Image 1 (cartoon, rainbow, N blue to C red):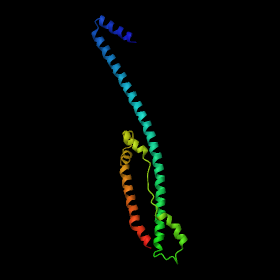
Image 2 (tube, rainbow, N blue to C red):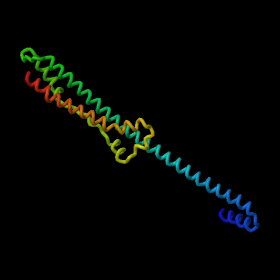
Image 3 (cartoon, one colour):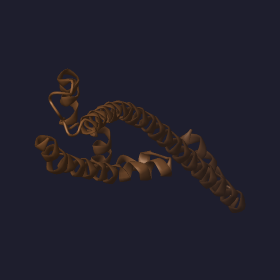
Image 4 (cartoon, rainbow, N blue to C red):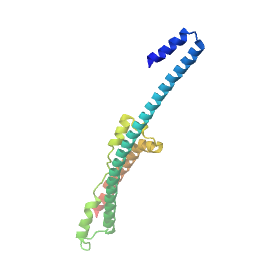
Length: 179
């Protein structure tokens, strides 16, 4: 193919047909440019396809991780509700008189009030996102912002957990021990 184009160039230059040669040269340049642009477009398309596949895998992993975290949070909330019911039942018995209180029902509610249940979510996928700077793969800007703020939300929740636990230790348990 190259020999063919070289032969055309030589014959045009030999015959002193410079205007035809320039037209031919411009055509050849345009042909090369179109080939380069086409190659770049195919490369961009392939890169976008690969990024889309990575995003899909990443979103599936995030979804699985958050489903497990949601299940764990629901269990923690359930246990907190049981603890609240236990404390409310014990408080309703105040002042506790051993002669009138059914000690068996009191003993059944006791295991829940003093327990401290904490939410410790799995964060492997989010941490790998942060460590590898892969947030750019996520095309949904709102989701990207929510994932970036996840650490702050979790820290706020854990701070509230610590405050609630201190409240139980410093206020509720001393009152229960008095009575």
